[in-house]
Length: 366
Image (cartoon, rainbow, N blue to C red):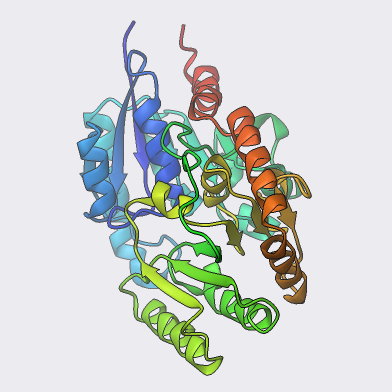
């Protein structure tokens, strides 16, 4: 059987966020007797190093934002290089892990007539769906029914859309063999420090909780990227901790390379922006509180493995955290149910097989 080279476009090469983790799970576990993955990253760094250590070929090629005026000249040069790269490697399919790269896929498809697949990891609006011409994609992978909805609203053929939920390596993310700490109840928020992840809101929630329950500790796990706006946001988060006099209760861990251990050290994960951290926490046997955005409501079984609570007002989330902190036995039971659910739903093999089913339809692989 001939192996089919597949070109993947990654949003980032210099850091590892949820999208990068999911892409790594896919290319590291794909059937290498059928497919040869090649990942294109816009810059070098820890994600590129991770892929290369896993024996995944990578190429550095900056793909500037297509719709920015300053990118007009650069984007056509980049698109030409991408087409050349796909041609040299005899790519049979191109799969972007970031739908903002859709315009680059059009160039490849137009010139080489090979199938193109776009992965929808964010909640889009119908206007964005039309703007990025999802109708030109041969297939679309959405991570939830909620992220599928705007595609349908924008008129995309439902036959093109496949829902494939995020996954987690269940052999790596496992419950701790024994409690890591006692006496305190540790609540974590994981992700790059940036406005989208809502660390400032997390601090405001902490400010609501501490006067009611001083046993709760809060961990902000992650760091800001080098962008000035992200550095500014991190300063504002730290200033907010000082303003509320929470230095004893809120701890900044910085970037963690040992996420399974970081998850084990928590009693509860809070996410205000969805993402693969939900699956990671549940696999580690931790309950999760999230808000009804993205895939969150479809990943958390409300009242069983955690809670889905509206962000506004924040009192609702604060109340649920206090309830669990004051009843640690219930919190542990929810975590145990979360692990069982993760085993049933979030396995890597299940995820990869569903993506390969998409490829099979497009490539007619025997």
